[in-house]
Image 1 (tube, rainbow, N blue to C red):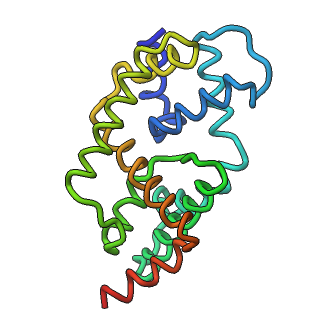
Image 2 (cartoon, one colour; image 1 turned 180 degrees about the horizontal axis):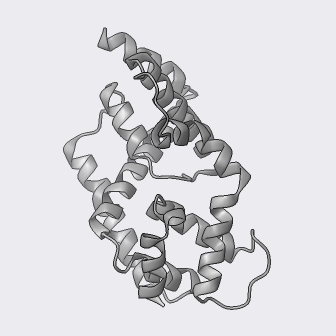
Length: 202
């Protein structure tokens, strides 16, 4: 099952842009029957979960602007630095809002992580970043040895996929979660911090 499922995700154009976190979310949604009843875990079930995730209206709406910006083949004028910043800012604010409501991320946070880093907002030490990476490493090991249905599915998905890339991506999410929790506990909005970041860069 591993090779067939992995090969499908890699070779089929519809699945080629999926991230590891997105695949995991699709499987988790399917297991809790968000896409309806299912009977046993097999290749067809996994394909169905991922296909339903891709077709969800919520995901299409959330990624519409990003897809037009990244995937459009139509001739267009180069975006200004201001326009690019607005796209990154909108993505960061959307991620913050979603995290506040659900304490989860729907997609990897590497873009938002780099954006907030560039603004000087993530002022963690090297030791702290190392701790985030170590936590991500332990999470991956724990999930790959979990014998529950969700654990087995995660193991099937992650085998053959670059674990180092997963760890880097997950470490970014853990860092963002920590930062978002700090802002929430202080009653501070991310937007106000972003504006301060821009001011400091001037």
